[in-house]
Image 1 (cartoon, rainbow, N blue to C red):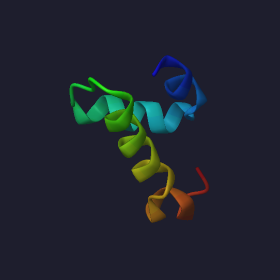
Image 2: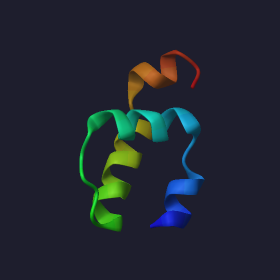
Image 3: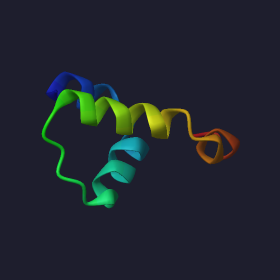
Image 4: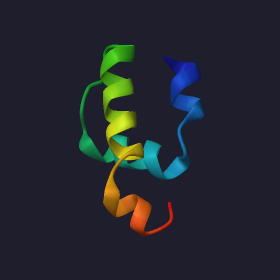
Length: 47
């Protein structure tokens, strides 16, 4: 789980932290990470 977390950009880590979600599994973290990686608003802003 830590390895995946470290692979995320600081912007995505910040967004995940801002959700306030209690992440208890790699699957949940991966879902959130992929969601924000694929978020069209982030892509438009060049992040």
